[in-house]
Image (cartoon, rainbow, N blue to C red; front, side):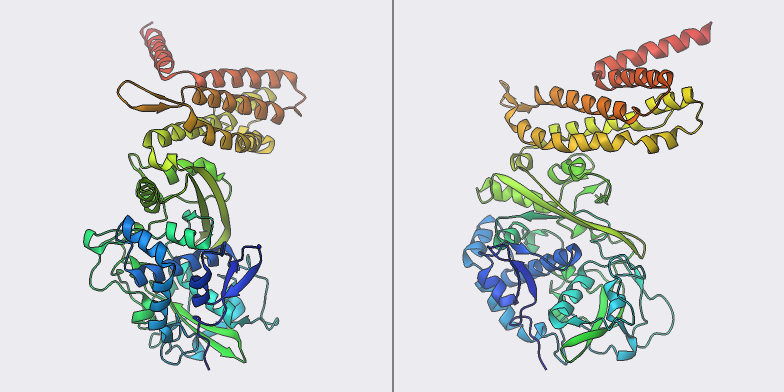
Length: 516
């Protein structure tokens, strides 16, 4: 039997007329300039498929080494990728007896579990409600996508012991794509999206990472062998790192059982940061995608490198492409993430936002945007319950001891962020136009828009808080809360100089009081 992924349809794509259909790997690179995007069974699968395709492109072209090589790859229009795939045709056969695609052929049937147990992604049934009586199974195309997803985006879980093992650790680790905001730069076609995310690859310059030995994808070296701690040989090796040992057990064109054990893991002190190109970092920690926090509140992390913050390296490469006029004037980011608490999946997110590419190429502009976001975040304290906050003042008059419970129940913060959700896109596109160039040739931004944004934020905070306490019938309590609100707003809109003066006066007054 054979099910070769080069010829069989299995990758779900969106066509120009917005239809979803499955195509083969060869067909994908033959038509990628007419297709819109990959659209997997779920966002984690979609992300894993993109990373898989990028590994193929990097290996096929051994680049792009620079902007000129990137343009050559673009002009080649997938022919080099097709030639490479045909060269390694036997490694992409899902049912090959010696090198089944992304599988370890020595795993026996007694290591297998029902496929529905894998499809839940953990012991939790958050994502699937199939059970042992359902007869649940996957088609061969679905099974191929599951293999890619398990190797690319999967959470910590206990698995079967590997062949020859009967004790010790058998926990499969989180893949580095878990609990982080994974960034894809979107293009108008699938080809453009893949090429925009095709990071500069020049091992001689150690870009994007150091290469030790041969930097080969796992399908060339095999997905078998006893699980171990290992360091990827380079970027391509990392993109195809065998985090799991897997084997399908198909019957009559369906797969109802799959063997899965732990796979390789990075050594304790080895960070994926040296290879990850689609992740932003703060203080050497990946920026996470919150299920409860608006995406734009992290926008600066994806656009700006400053101090202890570093935007995704693919955005640095995009800036280089724009300098050669190889990128569009508007950049669209697709941000995806799967949040998990150990072995329990909490949910996934698949969001996007667009911005003028000037934010990518102009550090001063991106810095002003960071200030604008900081202003919004600072005003979040209006809705907290600390001593001196408006909700604390409300609780004090009401003789209600727990201000935190009142703050949570009245929830003015949700109203606040909902208002700013609508206002932020206007700021995002207005800031680049609000510029002045000095005699020194330096362009500054935000002289008008930043004060206007501060006013918008203050108005949103005032309105949200006022609406949240409208149901409180104790007018004395409401009046006390609103007085505190206005005092707090005045403090927040004060300039740094005014704040320093106020702080100095308070210190002097305290000193006088102690002296007396």
